[in-house]
Picture 1 (cartoon, rainbow, N blue to C red):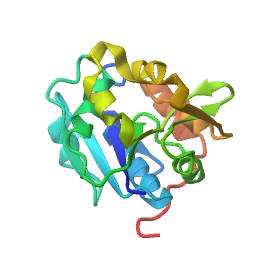
Picture 2: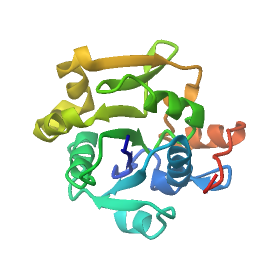
Picture 3: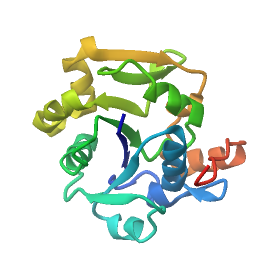
Length: 201
C-alpha cells in the first residue's frame, strides 16, 4: 500500500522561539528523525509542509529524499497544512500518515503498527488512554479533509467519522510527548532517545 508521510512543520513555533523542524535531538533535526523513521517503517515518501515565517529556512535543510509542500497561511491551524498536502499527493497514494513535527521520538515499531492497522480505517495510536500521533488516514477520506472548515481541525475529521476510528494501544510515550517549549526540548535532550534507523536500512 502506497502511504505518504505528511510532516506538519508550518507552525510559527511561537512558544519554542525557533523552528521546531530544525531543532536537534541526538544529532538529528526533528524533521530528519521523523523522515528516517517513517521511511524505515515502510512509508513510500515523506512530504514536509512548511509556510511563513520559517518555511525558507526549513526548505534549505530538508532531509534527503523528502519534498516540501507550501502552506501560504498556516495561521488558522494544522488542518490547513493537511489540506495543502492532500492537494499535492501522488495519484497512487492510498493513505497518509499525519505527523506533527513536534513529536520526533515515536519509535519505528510503533509506526509499523499504525501502518499495519485495519485497512480503510483511521488509525490513532493511544498511550495511557490518550490519543496521539502519527495518525493514518485512508484515501476514502481525502475529499472529506479537503472539505472541512479550517476551524474544525483534525479533531473535526475524527468526530465526523468516529465509526472509522480505530485506536491502537502502544507502550511508546513518544506518540503523546510533543516538544513545544525550550524547557521541553532541554528535557528531551537530557533523556535517552531511541536512535532513528540509518537511511537505507
